[in-house]
Length: 228
Image 1 (cartoon, rainbow, N blue to C red):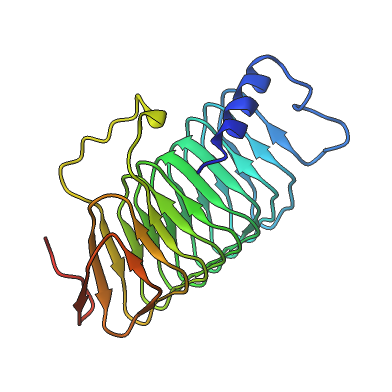
Image 2: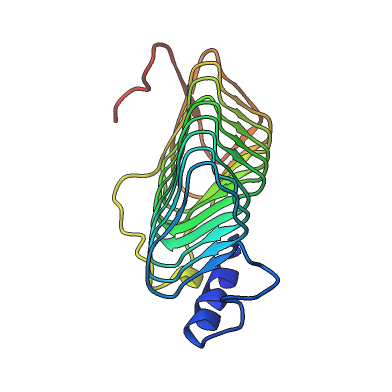
């Protein structure tokens, strides 16, 4: 599901003083063990990575991959990035952000604002996923998170909610309410919607979706889905 073993391997390498940090053939990369990273507005960087710290990518900056273990990733308007990964922290993208890759987190939310374009997929374990007028190139996957494919968004893959398993212990799956899946006004999900656990699925009458397995869609009108 997740490629987060790569993030954990990165953390171990950095903690051991790996040669990744300060590598002479990657002069624009920033690698840390402890501390946050800021990619300044309008500047160009290669990879950004830290273990204990957040990452901020300011407006109009260009970066390659961005990864942290304990920290959030925030991307301001009109920035361009590649893959973004965190374990404990959210990922939040401003308007018209372009991502040539995927967004992944374990314990944290993912939000993409208007005009966002993500060529890959979005994956969480415990964390909500929200899109507003966003183009997503692949699938949305989670175990325990709510999903909102908001107004005017287009998911060119499908949606999958996985059944919790012992593989993710000691992560807690103790939430009492099933995940809420909302497909909003004029939104489109091209692929299948597959649910391996109980969910509440709401689909706006103007939305278009693929085949549904494991849930019954509730149609709604208006700007907001029904409350539970």
